[in-house]
Image (cartoon, rainbow, N blue to C red; front, side, top):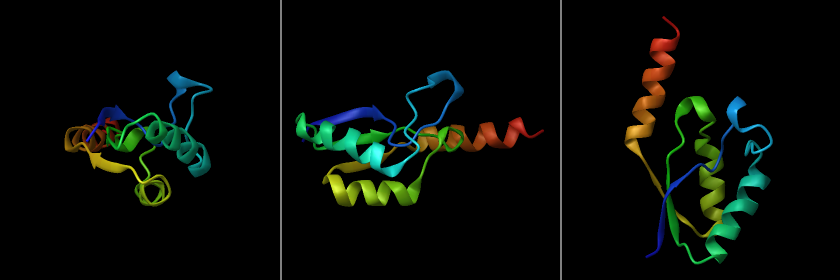
Length: 87
């Protein structure tokens, strides 16, 4: 199985103006292209603070046939950033 080891299905960042993937249809188009290029799955490295969308991921999986693996390290970093940024 060919896996892309670091992708973001949904992302919104001030550092990436014009490269936002905040709408499900935009993400589906991007990831259909990934699938067509020969990848069968990817590791979703999107932390909480960058726009991670669990419901959107479920729809993405259903409509693209990709296998999605979540990275617990990035999930933890997202929780930490949200927790410590508010203090």
